[in-house]
View 1 (cartoon, rainbow over the protein chains, first blue to last red):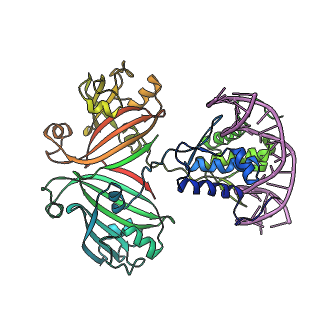
View 2: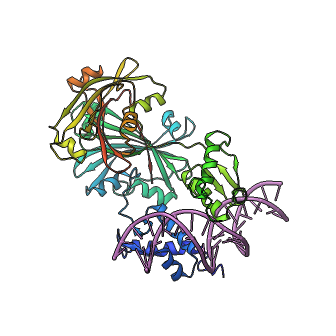
View 3: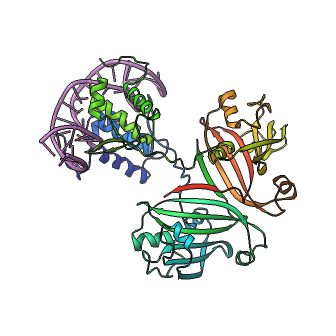
Length: 240
Length: 240
DNA sequence: AAGTGGTCTAGACCACGGC
DNA sequence: CCGTGGTCTAGACCACTTC
């Protein structure tokens, strides 16, 4: 009796789904003992290897830790390193109330360097979106986003001061963001930026250039950000 | 005939080892077809599940890509993002000839903040190692390393100007480096640093604080680095 | 001693890819 | 069509942890 067609899904995935649901619902907390291979096999009427496969998968995902002789336990809360988050997401994660002020929204075709970053022909029409990021009432950062005008033509300025650009691109354009390659360096505030950021001329500023790739590998978005160094820190985890 | 004790290693690991060796020797190149599960099972006199386990492991490591109906193929060359490398390693990877000048090497017990970074009591004795990093003849960066004087007592200054600190710690102290958590921000050169780095006062400088963890999870090393912004860029890949 | 995860067998059927 | 990987069975022994 190999396949009983629960939802067309393999048995091991159904087992994983059940455990994931209990994790998300909070019925299983970090450190808790999860059903053993043998229990799962008995409960789901499945062979040991299949139950084992299910648990091994959850372990790879980091949801669960397995210790020989002891059992399978709920993993300690996941810490997301090197996670790509929008400015809004990052700041609200730190309990900071962020808002944005639209500085400009235009269509340009005179920045071949940026077009190159987006892997587009030099004279492509680009949407350029300049925003001032505020924490509380204090200006924190200037972010300039570039997108292909052909792909994101009707991007309006509606809601852009409160809603994450990421979510607009995701909901309205079906864009699935995959990863970003970032270049970080240091610079100093020129008169224009110093005035916008309310900092003295020559203050240190973090400059971050982001190429944001869709899950399909295309560069969907190029962002140039200038961040007041007294208010920002970039955190990275690097592996050996 | 379950166990034939080749080297006390499980059969699936022996199979993986054989394939890894052919990969490293270059006998298998990216895109090449790897032995199928059934071939491996026959060759090694092992069951299908075991051969399968071996290939699945290699796939998790990214060495191999499996496509149902088609076969198992050597994966395209791995691109290492967010890889922890010493300054020497980074620069020689870019074809730059680096050297170091020892600025100071001392034992201190008056930096409780740094001791805290190393998860040590505030008054712990620490080795403080200050080095100037040069690219060609030009000063590029100042790196100050802190280590527990108890754990790395006999660290001499021998070879420190040519050999990577990483390799010394690894070879002489058996330290296995696991990962580093880094904080990056921007600052400007004060008179002391400006003179050392041959840059004008107030020039932008990248400041990176690294907590370098051993594979056992201990913080083994704390590094404070100041990098001329006109010569350095931090590259990160972030994932959604 | 009892229970757990780690390895392994000798098969089986299925879904899919390429010819 | 044949060969591939994906799923699965119904057991087995081992090494290990916990009690």
